[in-house]
Amino acid sequence: QKEVEQNSGPLSVPEGAIASLNCTYSDRGSQSFFWYRQYSGKSPELIMSIYSNGDKEDGRFTAQLNKASQYVSLLIRDSQPSDSATYLCAVLPSGGYQKVTFGTGTKLQVIP
Amino acid sequence: GAGVSQSPRYKVTKRGQDVALRCDPISGHVSLYWYRQALGQGPEFLTYFNYEAQQDKSGLPNDRFSAERPEGSISTLTIQRTEQRDSAMYRCASSAGLAGEPHGNEQFFGPGTRLTVL
Image (cartoon, rainbow over all chains, first blue to last red; front, side, top):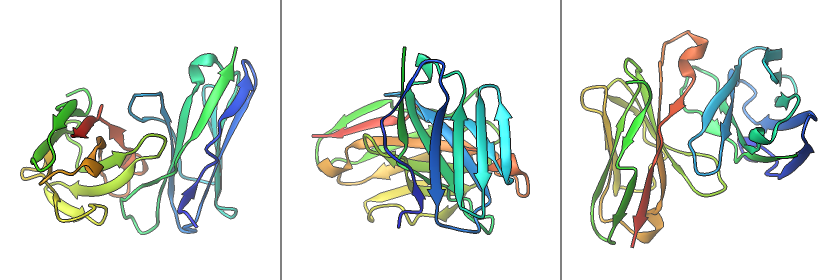
C-alpha cells in the first residue's frame, strides 16, 4: 500500500462546477496535510494546509480532513480553466518527523 | 531572497561526469529538502537538512549522490559519475522548520534544475 494515494485522473469538470479531489494516507498518526497545485512544466505551489479534522476554507478552495477515515480532500468551487493543473496531496507523518510524503497527483481539467 | 532559487536551471552533461546542483532557500528557513520528480509523478524525497545537519538521507538512490549544507543556508546536491538514469528534474524546497508551529512545515519549492545526462 502506498503511503499517500491519489487517483491520477484526469478529472474533467465543466467551468463553474465543483471539482473534488481526494487523497488517502496510510499513517494513522499523521498530523499535517498539504495540497499543492502544479502547472505543467512548473514547480509545486502550496495552496492549502490543514491540521485538524473538519473543513478549512480559503476563497474558492476548501480542504476537508477526516483522520478517522485517513482521508483528505480538496474542493474547488466555481472551477475555472485556470484551475487546470495537477494537484498533489502531501502528508507529514507523526512524531514531528519532517519528511513529507507526496502522492502522485490528480490531473484536473476544467472544460470551458 | 523572495523565494527559493536553484541553479543551474538546466544542465546537460555527459555520462560519467560529476554535476553539482545548487539551492538557495528562503532567507531564514531552517529546513531544506531535495526531491527528484519524474514526469507524471509526485516529488520523490531524496534528503533533508535542519540548519547544517543532514537529518535524513534515506532517499538518496546510491552512494554517487551526496548533499551538503555547510553553513545552514545554501545547499549543494552532487551526483558523481552521472548515468543516463539520473536524468530528471531535481527540486529543492525550504520550510521555516519551527518546532511546534504548524505552518513551520509548509514547504516552498524552487524552480528546479532539469538534468539531462547524455
